[in-house]
Image: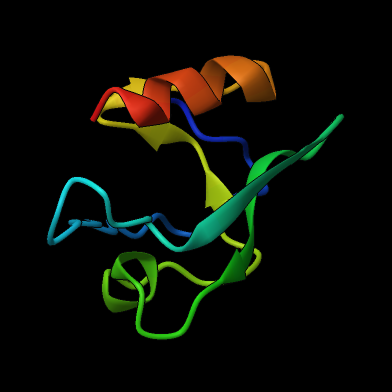
Length: 82
């Protein structure tokens, strides 16, 4: 179970499914010291958009694994193993 920061809004589960292996997820992942991982741009009509991901969403887990305190590079690698 992932322990969320006290100031985190209620969590939402977003399931993002690609229709083909070469399709992009359609969002940009950003990281800031003290803010953690969060969503920048979400492409309209993309799997991320259709899955409910919104600009500014904070990401605390990927595939059930906590990413709190992880580097942006490590999260990118975690994400690519889906």
